[in-house]
Amino acid sequence: MTYYIESLDTVVPESDTEVVLVDVTTKVRGEQVTVTNVAERRYQKTGEVVFDQKLDDERLEAVYRAYAKVHHLVYQDEIKLIRHKIGISQRGFATLLGLSRASIEQYETGSLPTTSASRRIAMLRNVNAFIIDQLFAVSDQTVYSRQDLRVLMQWHNQVQLAVERVRPVRHADKIDFDFEMPASMLPHGAETTFEVKTDGNQIILRPIQ
Image 1 (cartoon, one colour):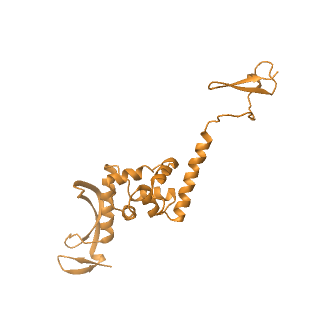
Image 2 (cartoon, rainbow, N blue to C red):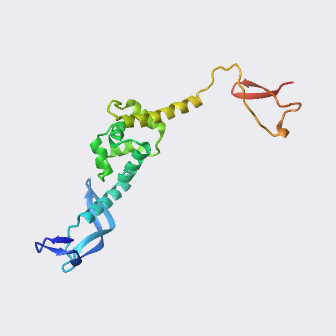
Image 3 (tube, one colour):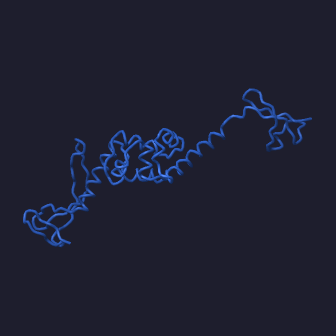
């Protein structure tokens, strides 16, 4: 591999260059951001900085990560992880959040999200079925792919099942269930059969004589 030396207007072999670790300070959205131990390629004879696409990309990512950390923004890897945990495509994820697909694509490849977009994505950090279902309910459901709809309906069904489990019973003529307790805790004279009655919010067990 060869590298272009601007001052000489020529290319040199990789062996004529070296990679050193430096501290870098640059502006991100008008703020100075400093990162340490960043790799930088230089021409050995003069110390001139040499352009290296891979190292430049790594430096930019390090700067963006530092900025995102300071401002509590979700960043590239976390955004991908959240979307993968939900199980939907970039387009579906964007629709769910009310963002553009292009924005999600850019965020997942290293662009910094806006503060408002980061907050919306961060709502799903814990992959909460209720929040997913709420966002799904107010989103444009006509633009989801069949696969995304199938996945989001599975989340919806989880919520419905949870709601059914906690819904109070308004009326029941008879309820059969098993109840176990140590013999020492049985009321005096009790055998194995109890009458169950309610008194406000209390459940009263009375032995059937």
